[in-house]
Length: 489
Image (cartoon, rainbow, N blue to C red; front, side):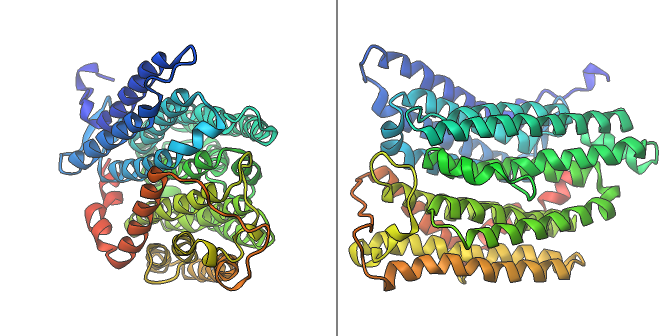
């Protein structure tokens, strides 16, 4: 490749660089907290939040700029900036929920916030990557950070177990991904998505290597987004990790992995859509169905939300199955709405947790509407949205996904998705019924924690969960056509 032709436009990675700089500042300020002192510790989450806001500002600014690339390995287009905003929303809300929560889990908050920013920056690179090597580097970078964040509560056996399970299974899944990438390189002689696509379209790719490579990539991505049957780690890790970290993982990991998923399959491998489309459709059906059926039997709120997260991964996968611009736009909208409603739901769990615990039994919400009506109302908004009740954002997220499936000729898949939504509505609404119609018991949790930061984060989540349902075009008009733009690359 001619080095003179490489584009070194830093704008392509400006939001990611902003997050890295913020992480360095947090680590520098944390130096002054050693030796039992806490001179700067109270300001660390707010410095981290400023870094998130700076990165969000850079992403919004890039929306109005021409598409830029960095060494033909990363790109700043509508799709990338949309993914960046989803990840930044998840990061910002998680930081707000963590201000009072994280110090009760681990007093070394500086390292946690720095890791959170670095993990988020690597996830954002996943959304911008247009080369298999960059995807793998970003994947491993954020995975290593999440392994550590899952086990930061070193005094809790469940947290340590969650980190170990996540590490062992994650390392195994990474092996599948890199092996698949190697096979695709062997089949096409390229790692850049556009060049892979040209080799495949021209008929020069070795299909004996290409199809096994695609299958192995599916395994690697399937693990990261919790697709069945690669979901085994999800309930245990979500339950054992600190709840605010679980909230972050449940949204940001999906956004990052699905972003790379979309780019690779729709830019590098569109010619094989008749093959991988059916494979993804089968995975989507299995993921939605098992996730919802397993959630019906849960008594732990975190495990219920974990299986719910698996089901939602199946809904998002429907958008990729279609291989259409409408599917990509619907998936972007779904990921954004999911960030607000799912992190909001986990935020309520943090308020309901008793000291020394990192989980809440469903029985703890009985009669909550009588004891804490505002908290119960907030939780109800998130649960109704996750169930897809109009006019909340979750309804339109499913509406756009299923509509894209129908337009793309996958009506039967949309029908199965709607049936699964009805199953999911049962376990969400069961919690609402317990909050408002069951009598409080001795086990009913009383939210005694006072955190203005968490209250502000939950307020933001409620406003956008309702607002994006009433005005969904505010987001769809901003980023509509993101897939058309990446297809030109």
